[in-house]
Image (cartoon, rainbow, N blue to C red; front, side, top):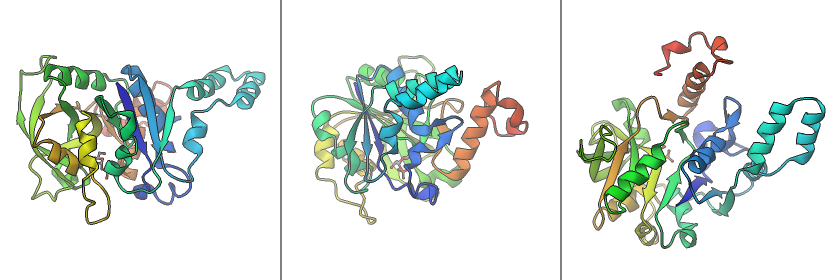
Length: 291
Ligand code: G1P
């Protein structure tokens, strides 16, 4: 199954840091966020990883390209571990597609329509990380259990954060999942960035989707929203008219939100707290660590 990683947004929540570099290049600890996402897809057995890039931000391609001079220089200085880390990033099998204008997540996905016309595919958004977890594998198992249906990952968020996310209205299917205790829902509806009063639940769409190719025909005719963006959520609502969609819970200690400066900072602290070499420099991190 192919994995599509849209990375062509304007990154407005991180301006001015994202003025000249893609926000997906901002580091979480020692790696840019997009490297975690690429590695997550490859660990789950993705047959191909395609990153969708916008204009004038060549650093994502550079990051996933070999850098033989840098590697040689590091080896000469005896910095073997760093040389290995640089070589590893440059050798990850990633290919690239192009979105010429930032017209929303739905529009970005439609740019790779020809790649996934006849097959289900993963979509991974770079503003959430699910490192060291088998979420995509569980999503694929859930999809197969339900005859190849689409599956989206959801994460419980506080009510004051629902307006940052797509929020689902789902019927719980406890006990229905192939992995025993995993909590799943069948979607009735979903709403993009509702107010707390409008939100049908606190279950937020958490940046991981397994989609059937039928979504592409819908995206082709999905109208832009009031801000001129074509929303994947609008296309998913339309897909619900003809296909079932399921939701799978991301456990609190699996998912890391990097979508805002505050959540990105908290993710850095939580992951530093997990790392024995860094834990000492974040002595107060236990206060925010949920693991
Ligand atoms: C997008 C989706 C939203 C989802 C979110 C996850 O929003 O439209 O449904 O909850 O990603 O991070 P964005 O953050 O691109 O505005």
